[in-house]
Image (cartoon, rainbow, N blue to C red; front, side, top):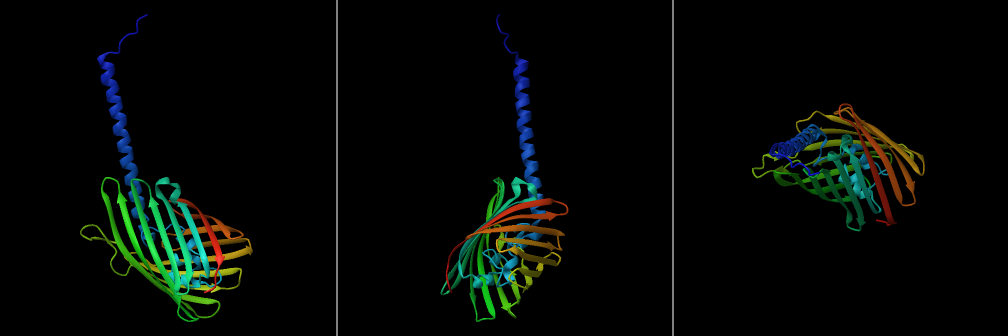
Length: 302
């Protein structure tokens, strides 16, 4: 039996189907990218530089503490670097609103020296068609027993597929005052000037000013609150607590008033390692799960 050859109509209709699927795929991709950009703009009010995780308050909660700070504390206030007495590194990953396209990664390294302490922070947000990156070099040191100071210089970049990329330089400064052994207060300023994107320098990173207060109630319990004012945004009040149930187990929880967001997490210690499972909740956009890991190296005295 001889197979019947496909007709010219078959080829034409088949080509039309292929073209339809191709156009539909491109349209779907554009809609996805537009949606991602919309979410990026919607959540930009939470950004400090360039994009902070939804759970940024979780990882930076120890900035105003002597007993409960860690390697990520300097991401909220670089003066917290002054209290680091051993080399330590950490990574944090967050699936923002449960979307792969909004993944957020932060890595931090702190290294104490006799001339002050140095920190390195790197961040990546987005996916192949739209992403933001940041590399920051920080420095912190003690100015006596009561005052710590710090600063950080950042290289920020944004890339949009089909549109190109742009970069900007910004800086941050901060100080922490140790009022008593238990009470600590500080000021942090992010990008007061500069930090502009584009050939015409028309797009500027927002300036952010914050005032923080921490209370080391004991070796187990810590409370922190921060008042943050971002350029062209309402005042944001952030509050968080940390409690060590056991030497090997801690819990953290907190809220942010500007976005009505809440965050919580639980951390486990094993030798020089710490592993936290976190979650942040936004009332409109949903849950953002995260994972944090910290490793401490050989202890070193200042």
